[in-house]
Amino acid sequence: MSNIEQTLSIIKPDAVERNLEGEIKEMFKSNGFQIFKEKKIQIEKAEAEKFYKVHETKPFYNDLCDYLSSGPIVVMILQKENAVKANRELMGATNPIDAVDGTIRKKYGISIDKNSVHGSDSAENAKIEIDFFFKD
Ligand code: IDP
Ligand code: MG
Image (cartoon, rainbow, N blue to C red):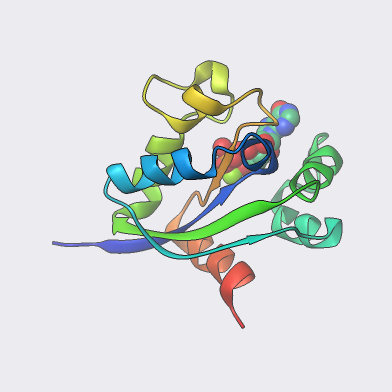
């Protein structure tokens, strides 16, 4: 049975800053994702705090929110069969050191905090995150 899904992807400031937007989008497209919607924005720290609220008790929360709001990002709705899981696989592990060959984080990630991309971790969170950036 077909299960076309949408998931939220973000090209994070470290990757936008290194002009990797085009190459990363090409990786999504060549792996069968359709970029359904996209926009390049810079968010306020307060918005980053809201977006990453699930991590508010973590020691890295403040730095994470400073970082996500530190420069332009590209937010995208990606569409594909089982897009949530497929995107997590293409992104690779949170820490680029642990990411396997062929993944975006292996290829472009600098460190656990500057790991180039965000991707929703469940279908439920994908809906919440898509609404967060694209509901208007
Ligand atoms: P994910 O991005 O692979 O879903 P999460 O555990 O949801 O990883 O963490 C969100 C983001 O927080 C990560 O992408 C990374 O940028 C940052 N992060 C996660 N763990 C650490 C850490 O131990 N130190 C610093 N930053 C972290
Ligand atoms: Mg996550």
